[in-house]
Image 1 (tube, rainbow, N blue to C red):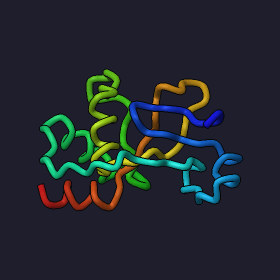
Image 2 (cartoon, rainbow, N blue to C red):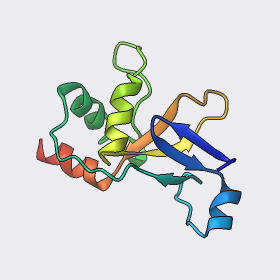
Image 3 (cartoon, rainbow, N blue to C red):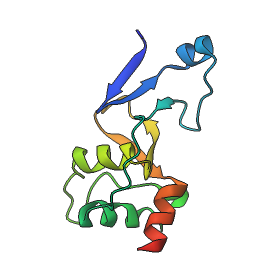
Image 4 (cartoon, one colour):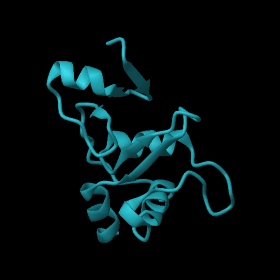
Amino acid sequence: AANTLKFNNIAISSRREARATGNGMDAANTNLRPLDEDVAAAPTDVQLAWLKRGITQPGGKLPLFNEFGQRISPRTVRVCLEKGWAEPWFWNAIKPDWLVCKLTRKGRALVDGA
């Protein structure tokens, strides 16, 4: 659709498109449509470390940068989104390639079980 932003195989639609298609909006005011495949693989050490950092943050917010000040790899973010461990919280209009994410229930359960 014309008002859909593609972010690493995740489609995020505008409010207008969501209203027109009848799809509901989430708390981040995005219409997130994850990939259909749900692979039950275990997270890597890097993915699990990133997810664990969301446990102590308000709302389960996941950091944009690691403990050394380096940006979290977009690949780490993409895989966690695809597997349902994280979800977009809001879209950053100033830095559209920086997706602010938060833990999902599935992500919390994964971290709690690790």
